[in-house]
Image (cartoon, rainbow, N blue to C red; front, side, top):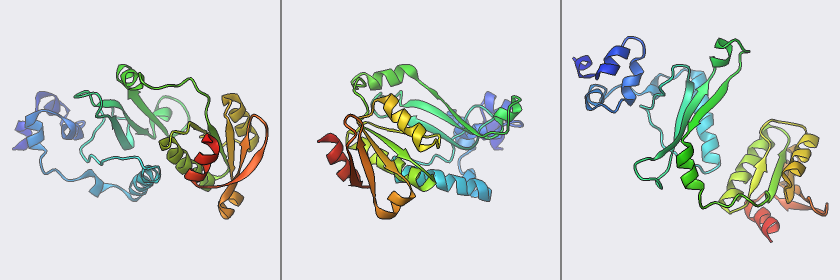
Length: 231
């Protein structure tokens, strides 16, 4: 049968972690698992909806990705989505980061029932990629967002502006507007854009110059914001 094709490691793990064979690089394991059922066909409703939402955020910000139905992380505590970040700029050493989500790890270690996400980064590979970057300048823009919908819009704008060369910072902790403004000041951001439900409704938001305090209304459009921030 196909089990005889598995390498020594996958044979040893067959009873405890058979999914590892899907990601094994051994030719025998790749042959043994050829035509294996797709994991995506066996997701429960909650996990399927969570994966769809994760993909929707990636689509929203224009992040290119491919779905690898055979990706399995080496540690057993991962749940739901796992990922790998790759580059075409480093030859065969394409992977620069990898990790995933874990829902039960913190509680198993004696902490509260909290979900988390973790990943490992190849520091040397990232250093090579960042060698040509300039990180000395202050952020051009800080986006302060209140509410889930406003935060989604802020995330979309941030990604669009970053692709246009604008250095953008964003609060990820759902803090109050006052706390976010303090953070913008701490970052020494040149401008701050404030988005809430009212701003989403009218399609414009106040853009504040943090140096002179002058505030102007701007359309929630990456090109319009880019023009004001970079001019």
